[in-house]
Length: 76
Picture 1: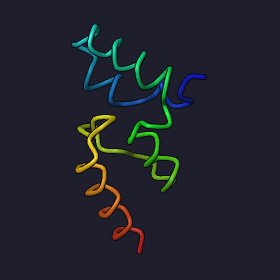
Picture 2: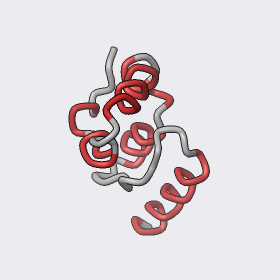
Picture 3: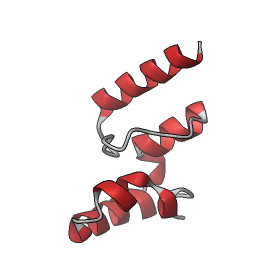
């Protein structure tokens, strides 16, 4: 099953558009095979936040923690 947000994921539509081979590899490994491990997906589902930072790579744990902390403070 593919990630439900793949078609509109800004990481691919904006950040990775000039790197099609790398994007295809990440999509296959993460978005099509194991999308629930993607930090971008998990942040969106957990916080229902409409915008995950473009810079957040699907497996950047440290940045994901920072983003979640920031979003939680913003909504507190």
